[in-house]
Amino acid sequence: MTEKIDLFAAAPSLVKEWQNAMIALSKAASLEPSLVELVKIRASQINGCANCINLHAVEAGEQGESAQRIYLLSAWREAPCYSDRERAALAWTEALTRLSEGHERTHAYAALREHFTEKEQVKLTLTINIINGWNRIAVGFGLWADPAAIKASAAAA
Image: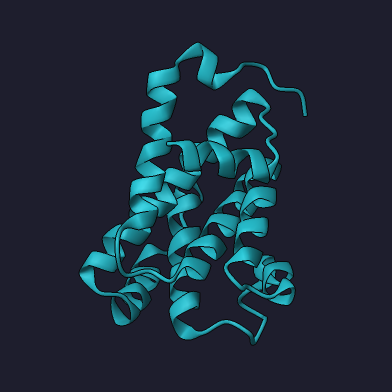
């Protein structure tokens, strides 16, 4: 993948604010870090974002997520290793990431309500929106970043 633009050089304050939104959301209470990473990986798989799949697979492993669960994520419906709460989050992720495909949001939202508080629903939905945005930025501009470099950048924020 060839990077088409250096986001931080082209619009440093805007990109920093976008990055800070994800950092702030990550620090907010209530969602399990490994669940958040699974959601980010699944949205990135759907969007074909190799950069974000790579980054969030590493981060999921650092959160204690097993390699098996990361590998099986694209087939989560058939894999027995995900909890009902995780399945609800993944279904909601797919429904929002594939809006134009007409996926059934009614059933996904019903499962979401069953397993998540209203505050958690908002946090999860914001997480899905932000990762979809990062996917579009990374795919659109051909970004590829080493996970260690991303972590250093986030720590400096």
